Image 1: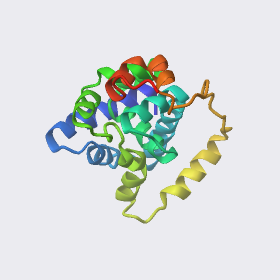
Image 2: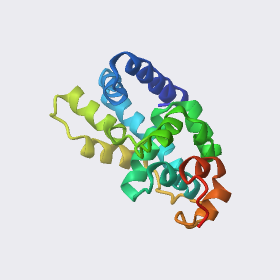
Image 3: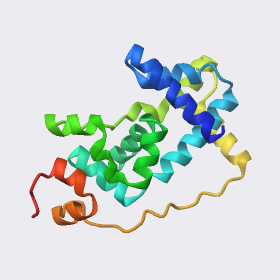
Image 4: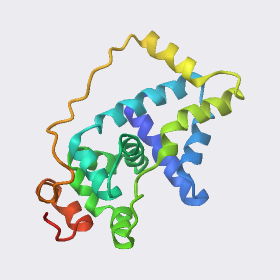
Length: 189
């Protein structure tokens, strides 16, 4: 699946979710109308884009927005960024501090909510749609393993950039000033 097609699918699911209220279900529904191969290609592109966000600055943004962020939480956060669409994805990839302008992040900060943009279900859209398409007769994990093996791709470790202490408010204010201003107020200790 080409990148443009992937993002068109995400945007279509976002538009459908405005009417139905559930992005992940809209995405699963759209994917379930495609072939097994297309679902696997979607997963490959999702993993690529998801992996590209595996950087310390993005994790720090998730940490600020979520009031902390575990490994699993960071997986869900990156899925949530993808669910926001191409524009927000590209903004976050270029500058995670730009999330200080995201309406959900602003509202969550005002409400003391620490779940904005964390969207676990999006991680499983391909698996759920594969199950729906096959009626549960084919195992997604097996199909994915076969697909990936046939692609003969090598796993490359991500360059996460420079590691830093997320609990150091001074560093967070310096590295992500707008998000830190939203989430840490004037705390510099």
